[in-house]
Every structure is written in structure tokens, then in C-alpha cells.
Length: 91
Image 1 (spheres, rainbow, N blue to C red):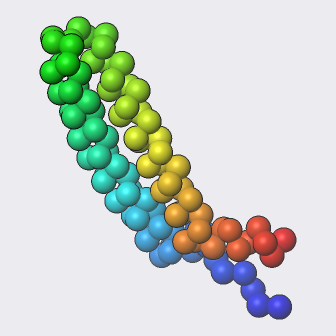
Image 2: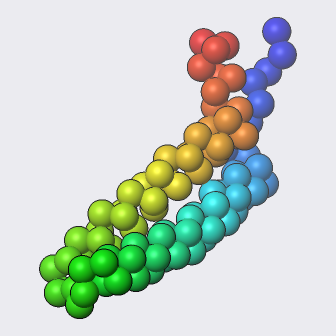
Image 3: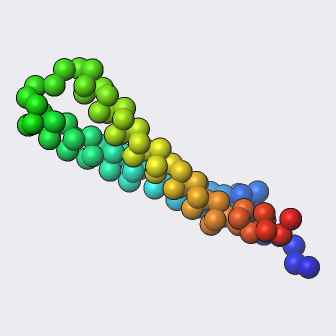
């Protein structure tokens, strides 16, 4: 039986995996900002001037949803790329 891969216990692969996660989150932050800006522009065009509560609701709802989706997607890639998924199958 071969020894299990080090996964995130080894500093070099861990640094690569976390850097990839941060890169995914940076892109998702940009995507969230674009989605929020587009949504606010459409809402302002359709409904006229927006009040602060509406703007905060759009930022929290749409921005939060995009960022949470990106974080979960990034964690799936982190788990798969670091060998944690294979560790579960071996045990």
C-alpha cells in the first residue's frame, strides 16, 4: 500500500492550493461587483432612483450570493486538487 499524499500538510502544495483559492476569490469578487453594478443600473432604469435600503439589499443579496457561490466552488477545487477527496476514499 502506498503512503497517502501529503495534501495540505506539506507547505509547498498548500501554498499553491491556497493561492489558487485566493485567485478564484479575486475573480469572483470582480464578478460580484459587475453583477451588482449591472443589477443596480437595470433597477434604476426600470424603477427610477433607488433608496439606500434597496441598494444595500441588492449588494447583500446578489453580491453575497455570487461571493458565497465562488467560495464554495473554490473550496471544492481546493479539496479536489489537494488530495483530500482521495483520502476519504482510502479510509
